[in-house]
Amino acid sequence: MAAEIEHHSIHIPQWKKDEVETIKKMLTTYSSTGIVGVHGIPSSQLQIMRKNLRGMADIKMCRNSLIYRAFDQSADDIKKMEKYVDSQTALLFTNENPFKLYKILEKGKTQAPIKPGGIAPKDIIVEKGPTSFPPGPIVGELQGVGIPAGIEGGKVVIRETKTVARTGDVVDAKLASILSRLDIRPVELGLELRAVYEKGMVYESKYLSIDETKYLGDLTLAVQRAFNLSINSAYPAKATISTLLTKAASQSRNLAINAEIIMPDIIDVLLAKANAQMLSLAKVASAKDANALSAKLKEKLAAAPKEEKKAQAAAPKEAKEEKKKEEPKESEIAAGLGSLFG
Image 1 (cartoon, rainbow, N blue to C red):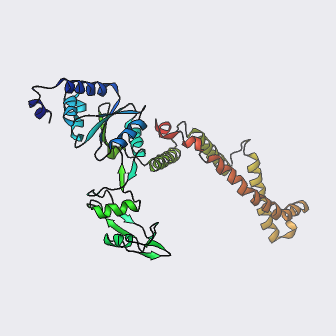
Image 2 (image 1 turned 180 degrees about the horizontal axis):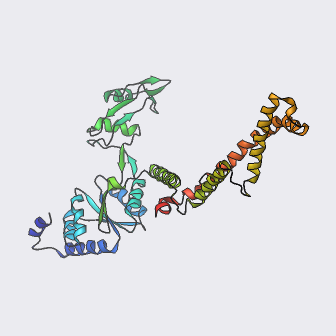
Image 3 (image 1 turned 45 degrees about the vertical axis):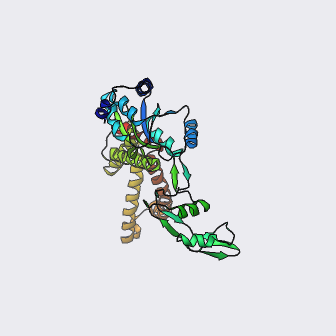
């Protein structure tokens, strides 16, 4: 395209040269350059958009041929943007990152009625229910465009939900008029961001549309799984070291108890375990010979069921507290993947 322009540039008016130089300067002044489609946007609406973007981005309207020429005289990376210049195009210069820019432009879009001869951007559906129209010729007009209508309670009602146009259909004048009167606005009016250039990279709009809720959910799930992997594989990291130490202490305590290793921290548990085993043995001996036990031992054996119930009641609480100690805190999970494996 640039080569074709060159053949017709023997006598270039000064205003065109100035325009090209202005574009080239803006390409280097701002960190991001967006190519936006402005087809079908009324000039009044465009002025409102300019005002809303003031302080965030500058919109420059210029001929496509001048955009091509400016790109051709700029860095090689910028020339990649030529393929996005088509139909009615404007340049958008900003220091915002491409993702934020896309979000700003999407948020600034408004709904508008479709014009006669316009292409339906999506399925146009008329919902059933009452309208604000009094009885009159409107009933016939609605039916004339395929919308089942009637009169109920002194008002015109639409009897059933109807798809009056499919995506890509041409909307004729009659249907466009009815949709406007029903205040159905299927057209999304705003700057159509085609691509953004930033630091040698070109971002097409389809890659800038981010579902933030899903993205945050996926990131949270990834962090949780990484946390679990770190714990299960005993991989020490800043976000998991406290949980790993708690888990190691618990496991070593259990090992010491099961191996009956005498240590100050578990001597009370070992004595309780030995006492329980002694009482079990005494119970077996008493069953064989009631006189085999001393009076004191018989007294302890009689009190054993109460002590056992008391111990069972306390056990769930202790287990719950132990489990609570091993649960990762939200602050630990929020430390992120980087802190786990960075």
